[in-house]
Length: 403
Image (cartoon, rainbow, N blue to C red; front, side, top):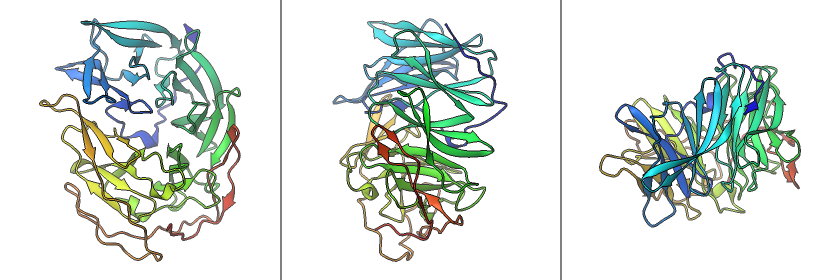
């Protein structure tokens, strides 16, 4: 058992994860894991998604799991489970053993106060290791909880409270976190192989809150949320890792009376980040549906989600097909293949585009140009510099249209 000297977070919430996914996928999309329900009880379930037909394997233990239990698929098909038991954060690997479920205990992280926040980070590239984030009122720790040699291991400790979690490389070395310090939130990079060395990643304005939501390893496309263009109101924006251009904030990503959460970027677009399709989860009064947007366009395509969609879960193929896992009574494990409309280059001037097709219960709205932001300057995403990023370069934040 490993000691974890952290304290409760005094009610601090992760503002960008208000719509958690109903299922977690490995970085390559081969496996998924979720807590499934059987009446009033919950049990882990593994989804195999890389074969000719998807199928689910239940992994129940001797007693039902608590609703807040976290599960995460590993690259070899086992499922990591995170339970909170008597103030301890216990980690185990589950795997099918014929008619039953095997469990390999990995150890536990013990916190002085059972209300301390410790959660799993998104699946790391490669699927061999898993990490967790422990958040206290003044410091944040990054833990290796699966794949190490001696049980849970604390890899880094950062000043400030951190949230988010985005992997910036294919080796699982560079982790981007949103760090709150001095009353502001800025995205930083933690080098897990250099003792947790921290580098700045995103600072659009001195007084803005700037978070990184998604990153694509192939194109360098980054999706961010910042209140720089509209203080106090977070807006979705995009930039390219290593570019000297500033972050841009398309007006089309502001959907009236709805929350919009990006959850997947199309891979394989090495030299054309503007052509990458980005999948959005849109939550509104009428429910949840799927949005598809590309930086080269100034509109969002609103698409009806399949019945039983595990909301916020999905994966792009390099060819531009969006795969959405779903579960219904008739199909307990399914994947819908969605072919959204192809990319349409944006016109050279910010003229309104045709109305967006209607989403379920949400009227279409005309496209608007990317909005000018009020701050006098912006910073573009950092450039990886063998092997770590360097601080951001600065560029004026003006009215830019991406062609």
